[in-house]
Length: 184
Ligand code: ADP
Ligand code: 5GP
Image 1 (tube, helix red, strand yellow):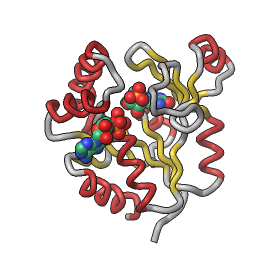
Image 2 (cartoon, protein in one colour):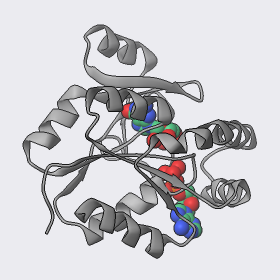
Image 3 (cartoon, protein in one colour):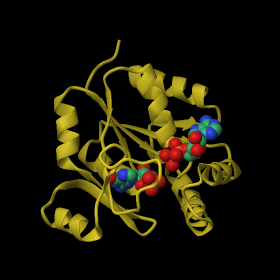
Image 4 (cartoon, protein in one colour):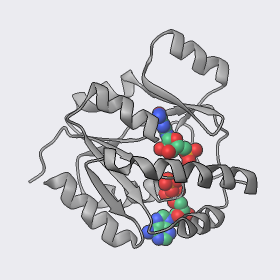
């Protein structure tokens, strides 16, 4: 039986499959809602404004910081990413299991505000798998992939800060593990 209203934070290196696994989980677990966060990075070809992110200009992002609209925000690979209070509070009010897909900085900031949230770290067995996934995804150029892989090395040092570590080598296995954790 699912207890509604859990706050679940997912982190993991770029290309590990955070977005993909969320799409799988959605099919397996009802009553789940991913918070749409806000970013200044360029929209990828398969992304839709308002569904994948709210894509805004840096000036607009800075205005939102000044108006204290973010629960947390971070700079990742030269772009701003932030979680608006409004998106999180609205999802929580609905009594849904709320999913936040954040980088390490964001997750650690949420931990200070909501220490009882569930923190899940996704990884692959090695960096080569990540590299291949980023290349196959085809959304980032070589320089950006190198930057993300470099960052992955640092990010992996933080896995002990998380309640659960899931290895996403085989998607169906990882998704089932995820489901078990959420429904526990
Ligand atoms: P993230 O959101 O963590 O950056 P994505 O969900 O965009 O990562 O996944 C990166 C790429 O890896 C995508 O092309 C996706 O289809 C692929 N992928 C994700 N999980 C797996 C998996 N378990 N096995 C093989 N490919 C995967
Ligand atoms: P990407 O550019 O690959 O979509 O995302 C880069 C990183 O930013 C990922 O680790 C993603 O989880 C994280 N991210 C997305 N939205 C937010 C946010 O609102 N805050 C923080 N701190 N990180 C975010």
